[in-house]
Length: 366
Image (cartoon, rainbow, N blue to C red; front, top):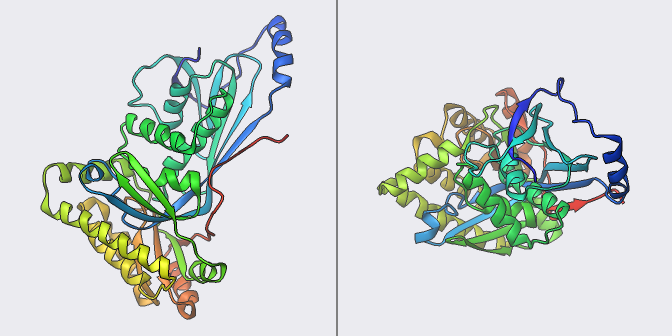
């Protein structure tokens, strides 16, 4: 059985434990029947209603979120090895981990470690993970990583899971590590597309918001994804808002109800395919998002929102929890080039993207 607490080691001094010739001979036949596995899942932009999928709000009120999966992906690979050891390489973070101990408590482990602990494969493998988005981007990469790893490891240990089960396990493990989260990131990761999510307690109903190809292209060309250059740690911001909600902070309660209302208006706008009010709704969502807790906003975000408005954007908001990361703006087509130049002059990075309609993909070379 895999032992699960992972000790950090540098890549330079790590080596696979050696196996005897007899062990090799006994496992080569089995290994020849295995092939590497790969997983890919999209991150997301939340247009409106983010935060309302969080417990405890979704236990007392229906949460409503409109989000879109985008083609900035999180990847994972799993390569079978000849021994019973399991290792993990976070490629973009340049970290290597190796399992050496059993842990019954997931709190304190990072997300890949905790998911390994949940599945405990009794066959050896090497896991690698990497992401196309900056760390702390606000695009839901941690939830997306969880989706990819749960899908990958369940396939490896031959445990069949529905997409809803993959979401539930990934979200549960994330919460058990001490990071409060809803499920909007996870559903974007498994389903792809542009979706309306209705969240009641732990139950989520997802409805695709279909657009024609022409309308989709028009919307795509009117959006800008801007990286502030500031990484955020969503866990602490989320906890700040949850604590304020539990303490009965009126401003936080009112802001969450307003975010839910705006998501309903956003849904109607997508259903009619008329986006003239998209900038206004993004602005209104950001207004109430900032009222959840002071840690949601930063001076850098204020600066870039101001740059956007002065350069022709009709509205924008921080993605995810805020506190840094990425911002999404809506801009009329005749002003979008000038807006790009203004953001670059302000030292921000424009991140190109397309909508992703594939969702979670798991495959092998054969």
